Length: 398
Image 1 (tube, rainbow, N blue to C red):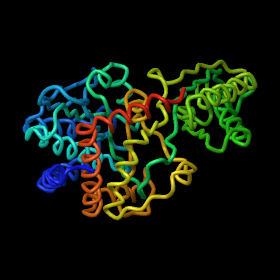
Image 2 (image 1 turned 30 degrees about the horizontal axis):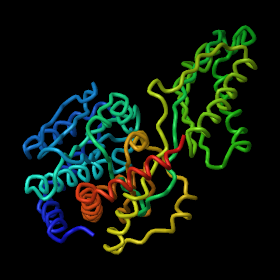
Image 3 (image 1 turned 180 degrees about the vertical axis):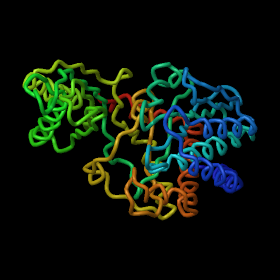
């Protein structure tokens, strides 16, 4: 276990920041900004961290609202945390990213204090990761090399309705589909047209019928982004954005082929031509949870009275997707979920309301203390760090 003076330092640092973190959280919550447009949150966080003595790199990895905040006292291990701060259209902070933002700050500040007091040696890094809900800023960080170049281990927290560690976070890719037909008067001469909206609808119908023939853990869903302009015109163009999700990257590749065929068949049936493209960055990876790190964090949370389902039961639960999965394939990582005293599910207005409560704030700081203590053990114990690396190397899915 961690020495009492280390635990006291972490607790004291985070408790001392309580009001500042609450203020930051509410300011982000009450001004929800969409991905890559989080200018208020970005300036709020970078200015704060710079004033707290971090070296801050703005517009990191070429992203306008991304940052890297770093503090070092010399050679040693390097631990990274992540803050998210984008919101959802029409929902606001329905995934509690205001809480993720301050959880990352709390952990970075707690570890920085240990470094300043020479209780540990090394570097702490906070990645400000934009657009988790849309263009997946963490993928850009990984592809730029910043993650492997700067940290040995990465960690972040995410609010949910309940505490969990091993719920399946799915691999995800985005499919953009367009159909091209031929305009005609819908009443006077519809037979002269080629209906692009019929094609998009048939593609959705094909996808719906496919669900019976794919794994129950797979997910296929999307929206029509262009469904025609006028009801009395046979539409010559239609478009949709769709998500494919699977438990593993291999299952995702298989599902993607089947989804493509749903829309190719619709094009042939209607006489349309089509254009398809998957996400330019590549897929969001499933989260590869590091057992050594996760089990120690679990032990710390259980000391605070938190109860978890057995791992085998948690692994049967299908969750959402997160670009933290891409970090988890780059370095040993954990992405624990912590409950915020609500029964609401993520991506709802009810969850957004819960993310602004004093109770959610309190539970965020509790989880941040445990994550900071997990980080402290990475710095202090060579055996613990090596065990995490072994877990990463031997268990890394292909």
